Image (cartoon, rainbow, N blue to C red; front, side, top):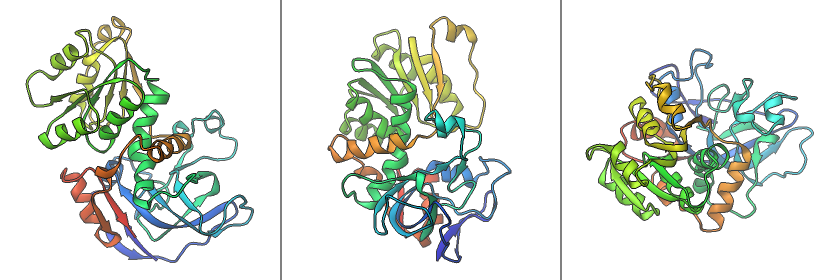
Length: 340
């Protein structure tokens, strides 16, 4: 089979040939039909996941396909079933997984980081990582629902516990932030979007934002706080990999507010403790998503509540994986979806 692999830190993706893998007990082989190219894949390419990555590695964690072969002991699924893939697996008896939080387990094995991912024609996954949609979903759509929608959904629903009638500020209207705008509206919040480009500002309006603020237009913090009633927002979701924006997010949060950080900045940010305790502000990390978030995302799309048209507008064949990473790095697209 063909794969697109990263040879090492900072190196371009290259096409390679590997044997088609055989599923072991409890595993399935999935014929990959679509895999989104995500900011985490660029993060991997730049060495953001540390020294334990087994280079060369096949990236790709935002994927969907059809079951191609079943390993011993697999029940409840059949060859040909359409599935979305959850990128995390945990060892038997893992206490975080048992509590419904496999994403934060110290013992995770991540598809596309710790083991080969879905920038490939086939990938192996444990049966526990499969999410079967209740109705057919176009492959590219199903792929991006697994991360570009499920990640902000996790942050808003399970971490921030956003409530109807609250004010939500979304910082950054990229792949994640654009979904956060729609999800916030679906959850009954008043949504304020902050983003740079005129095109993304217009998209935020089209996706339902009640107010859009230009990120380069003056004092963003003052404008967002004023738009949120003068005291700051109930929930802020930070979708930009920039430490300066982390600081803005904390400054925008209002009394009793929740600030959710999902942007992957590596640089430290600065904040005074008094700014947090004086407002009883919660600064929350939100790491990826869990399988239930994928199911919720699929249901929202099937119901017509959210759109991912802008996330699936750009596709490339697998052999153009490195160009797809470049598109993302240079900000030319929200997402590229590889179609092996």
